[in-house]
Amino acid sequence: MACYLACPNEAIELIESEIKREIKVIINGEVFYVPENITILKTLELLGYKISKFPNEGDIFAPCCTGGCYCCAVEVNGEIKPSCITKIEEGMNIKTKISKNLRRLDDWIPHPVGGVGTPWWIKGKGYIEIAVFSCGCNLRCPQCQNWMITYNSKEKVYTPREAAIIMTKYRLNYGIDRMAISGGECTLNREWLIEYIKELKRLNKDEKARIHIDTNTTILTKDYIDELVEAGMTDIGPDLKGYHLDTFMKITGINDREIAEKYHKTSWEAVKYLIDNYKDKVFIGIGIPYNKKLISIEEIEKIGDEIYKIDPEVQICILDYRPEFRNRKISRPSFMEMAKIWEILRSKGLKTVICQTELGHIGP
Image 1 (tube, rainbow, N blue to C red):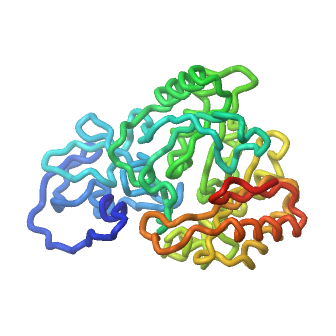
Image 2 (image 1 turned 90 degrees about the vertical axis):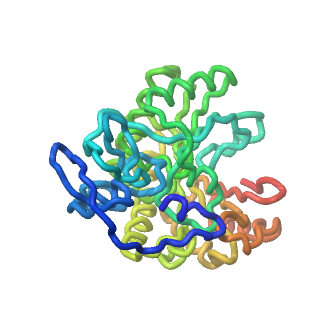
Image 3 (image 1 turned 180 degrees about the vertical axis):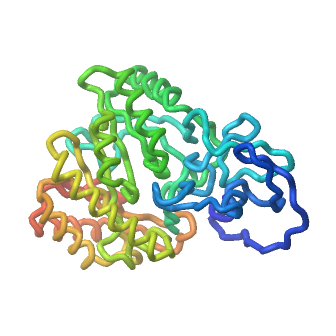
């Protein structure tokens, strides 16, 4: 399944096959006979476990299905593995409760620009952030701008403390105060992310340390936001991928309307909640994707109107979506297109608008 989801040319096809034989496995101390040649996650589903795409709505939260987020991880013969990509095998002893949190991460790199949640006034001053990229995402954006990381299921996995130690070393080596985590989607594994932020705070107790979360915002419930802030998050870059649900579905590739509606609603509610409750404590920068093949200028205007009602001062960054992954037929928006959008949003009364372009940033 992971290869099927990750193939940029859609060259892999899923074919149903007959169950040829059953194998014996032990799950939470009980013996079961299950079909061979399926994943552990599918095995658990066949045995009655409810698999969900939204947190706390089933027995197992499995949002990425590519082995990146480890939300669905189980213990197999004493080793923690992602159930979504691990093949069931004869004699496996599986426990659905794991002893430690893990997450697959791509790499740590110094970044000269930062993300949508990076304050505009510190950009253009050399390296300004150390960023680490988490693998796995709950969305299926055809034009995923970071797909080589999103669908990476080969990188090393880390505990929150291991990741925090590496990030802190990079911070000290480069003399940078901002530490960011992006993806993929870094918020999928909630327990891991909260503990990672807490570990960063323990290792970076000085007031200059900034912890930046870059997110698609689709599972960022109010209680999750509260927990992130309490743990030590200081900056956040939430995305709004469309005002209309149909646009959101087109951009994200989520075809299940029910789950798409939940993701879409959660995103908008999260942005409002962040601004209403944490504007003075957490820096907020909103990211909005633009490509005329994905979203109209009129809808960008509508998003601007809605953000103005919430807070005309909040930072907004319009992202010029380029051809990537499975949607390589689109063209990157021109500088003039992005300049027009900047003018439109400024005319709406929004004070801090930045547009990403092929020639650099416009604004604020």
